[in-house]
Image 1 (cartoon, rainbow, N blue to C red):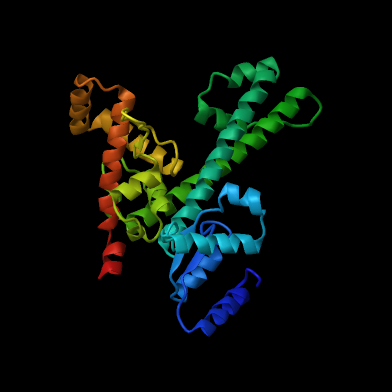
Image 2 (cartoon, helix red, strand yellow):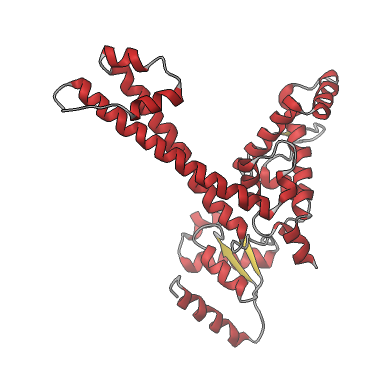
Length: 316
């Protein structure tokens, strides 16, 4: 069946012959399986997310659609696939797309600014000495106002290149500002309590909302959210040795957002500073204190998300 709306309708019609509503186990619900997942959820079918097939199974049996489908079905039957996928059909999905676009524009701006600095390094001395002392904002404005004239000398080519790149930076900055305003409005509308939390700005809120999706109630507890963000310590015990290690998995963007919130609170929040001082006296390092703070913040954020108006409406 084709991965189109017509194909999805054919699949749903095919399932009706069984006389009961089956559970669909879908791989890649956040990428190539997103369209199928949304159609099935809209049609009222239960959907669970499955991971890619086990590597040993793939080495032993190879890979094709039939093998992958059987592996997904076996994962559901065995009880290893129980996680509900993101619905991807409401405002958080809008936030995800706009945040992705904004991040791309920000990366492009950084790359173009680095190109401007690289050109200045080899530019003619008179031009370089005039522009290098300027800070970034003044440098961009000065380069955008350059008049290269006829392309009859290296200095003219340098001016043309710098002007083109500077105007590209200005266009990207306008694009970033517009997208930031859109994200500001959407995050305020989806979860105003999260935006009012100490240390949570537009970008952090957008990242955390994107990580949980439009249906955060699919997460069973704050421990599930902590595991999603990679801030839960993992057991690394053996025999009589009992210890935990740092979790380097999970959603690293959400992990970075929690880290930024923790750093802001360490800098400006008196309660967090008092906690850090107490833990320092107990012998913890700054890195260990940050890990504890990130776990606490994950619990706080999860409770806020579960108390958002959208979630309360779904539970009612």
